[in-house]
Structure formats: C-alpha cells, structure tokens
Length: 152
Image 1 (spheres, helix red, strand yellow):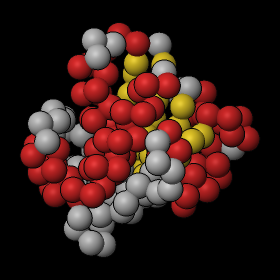
Image 2 (cartoon, one colour; image 1 turned 90 degrees about the vertical axis):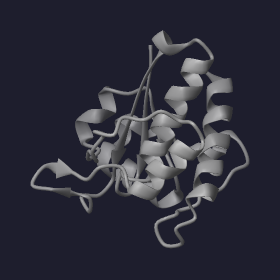
Image 3 (tube, rainbow, N blue to C red; image 1 turned 45 degrees about the vertical axis):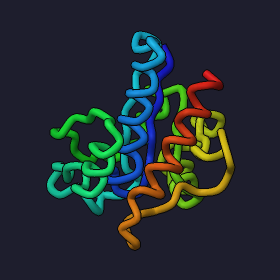
C-alpha cells in the first residue's frame, strides 16, 4: 500500500482538495486498495486547542462544483515529526510548504518530500487564500494529482 500525505499551510484549502481529488482519481481507476491518502498542515493557524477547522467553505464549493466527493467532517491536522515513518510520500503544494516539511519531518523524510506540480507542469499550486480563486487552485491540484497517479 502506498501511503500519501498532502501538505499545505493550514490544511483547510489546498491539501484537503488534493486529498479528496486524489481519492476520487484512485477510485475511478479502480485502485482504492492500493493507497492510503490523508492531508495535514505545516502550521497551527487553523488548529485551536487541538481541534482543527473544517475544510474552508469555498474549497468545499469548488469540489462540489467538480463532482469530487469529500468528508465534511474533515478537520485540519498538524504534520508531526513522527509522521516521517507513517507515509511513503509527502506532497507539498508550494515551496514554502516544502521548507517547513523538511524542518518538521527531519532528514529521515528527505527522499519522501515532493512538490505536487513537479509531477506535471512544475511550480507552485496557486494559493486561493488571498485571491479567492479556488477554480485555479483546483485546476492546478487536479493536474498534479492526475500526473502523480500516472507515476504510481
């Protein structure tokens, strides 16, 4: 089984979209039993007293618009050093995420850390937090997840 953890800053927009897009693509390919897929955050901005925020409503709306099923009870979870042994791949959304993933996970995970769009067009997944352009972020994430699945 391939264990994948998608990672972004707060785990309320891009990484949960990647988690559920990837789960949907895997299911469509009839490969559910081959993967374990989750998402986590590099910061506690969306986690208070150990309880994470739900997926940001505009991200939920974008997934609904595109027919991607998701778990409404999903809450932000913080990436921890102990996760280095729990996953085969850590997929970050942008360069900042990658830097923090290396800091959090340590050198044991260096070979497991990748940026999502390195599997396709390169660059960073567009961050919709400041522009509210969730359609563009969704497009980037879908492209990256499709390319990632082809490599696995």
